[in-house]
Length: 574
Image 1 (cartoon, rainbow, N blue to C red):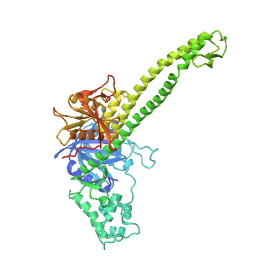
Image 2 (image 1 turned 135 degrees about the vertical axis):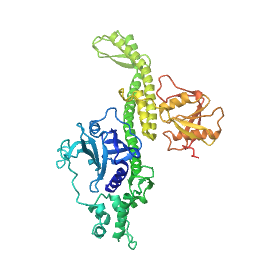
Image 3 (image 1 turned 180 degrees about the vertical axis):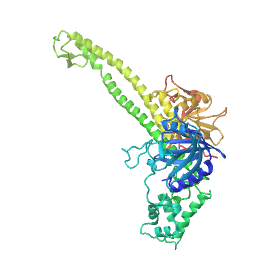
Image 4 (image 1 turned 45 degrees about the vertical axis):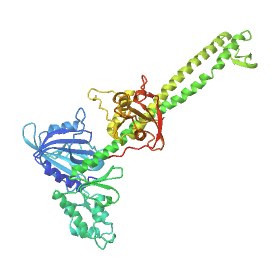
């Protein structure tokens, strides 16, 4: 629960300091459950980002404007109608709960001054953003509609009177006294459970950190209520004075785990802490990095599912083609049937289902099946036709097997790139490549057409100072090898293993043995064999690398190559 009542309290303090008397200039709805307000204030332009998504219920200030849809959604249009040019008169928190109210003054269609209220409910999956007419206290509209079928106790629909979420019958943390803390820490419940059950706006992690602020005799089972109360008041005081200590906790991979307006002792020994100057900076870092990681994982899983589906179909097609090829290669018997039947037409009787003749190839007796509907000569002609078709089929099946094999090789390389993708941009580029290759159907509208992004291959500097560039996908591999590199530069690729093209730029010099091994290690690192040892890497001059006509992106042929065996490794950063 990142956005608890305490964090909301700090957010309201920050918003009130920076946004009060600000004028709403623009309103956007980047995603179905997100809003962005451009606000002109005395301190300059501010951007307020609000999200009611279940896994991203938050409100904070941002610096960048997210990409917006071509046409604004209905709720965005309603907000523009009612709040364009509105001025923020106050920002408050409802009872230390996760509810922010932004009160605004605006002008209606008749030119009269009216008050509107934007209510932000940060309740996890029950989060919502509502526009309220303060004169009637009725809902003008909300980003999520809640009908009676969903919630019988509280409906959120245009025209209905607004009701706050059901009260939890807890004491707001700003009203907790030293006597209250004495009672809570001496109850039968564990102190953190008692604090959570009776204090409004406290998350489990914060409750545990407050309870851990004891100092009595050093005994973990004995709590000092004065220390716990001082810890709570200290956090509130730091927020009121504009001197909070926002912190984001990240795991060993750098993925955010949680954040708060104050350090949390429950995470100190488990995760690394990153400190920030403002709550908005911490929240923006937490959600952007967490969602980026989740989005990459989700998009890569979706793309991987599509690619593996095509791969399974191609492998099944390979199996069937091989079966057909075996049948076609065993067609010699049809030629023998035709020859022997032609030589023994005088022995065949019309309407017979078979004939036994002497096989003059090995001296044995051979039974030849006949179709009673046809004459013996017609049966012989049919066997010759079968033999001819089978011979043609052998050639066709082999060609098809080669084509399918190339497609399988290509999709294996795509899977390798998806596995190693480290950003949403890389996933999108791989998806675009699959669209252009025909593996994903996609119809572009005029508004969705985007300019082709410039290639941004990975760049490394090896110990000799030379530059090595590595493609992030198959299209970049082609660009790097066929356009960027000169014929005298060195080309590297793992042997029989999907991976990236790596180019060692020589600029007219000759590569040393150390240059070759370092570049080969980089190429091995950017391949499916990155976790192996003694990975074989082929290398040759770029002029010896060619792209066959009609080949898939990244697919090339090369010659005059040699092979190095290396352990995958990136050069050390100096």
